[in-house]
Image (cartoon, rainbow, N blue to C red; front, side, top):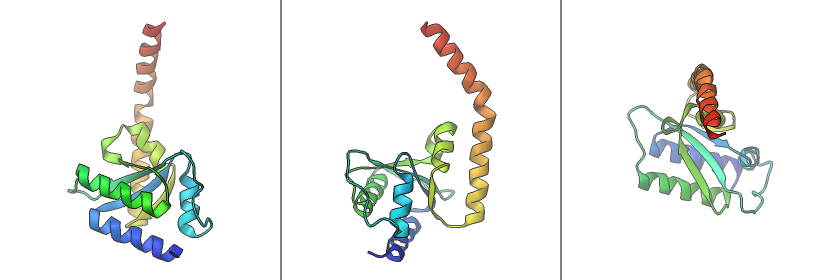
Length: 143
């Protein structure tokens, strides 16, 4: 499959399931981006899974079956044993920030994706003082 065919199949899948933005994050994010661009012929085999984050279009929600279908599609596309799919609206702000710091693989509209990423970073930044206090309380009581 050519890089263009890979991108087109991702775009088609995103259209079908209402995915607005697709990210690769975690230890293999750069490898996945290189694979889609054609810089890598295949992903290195190994025990490590691939991690993908999605932002869904407003008004859409993925059910368990749809998430499983998407994971299987990405496992087949990347040739890996496991693809973990995370819906950004379902995770805490700090994981959301980690996801958007990965590689953007698809965006329906680049400017809206940029604005979304700024929103995620602002939200995580606003919560840092509360997170530090929560950690302080947890670790203080654990001693």
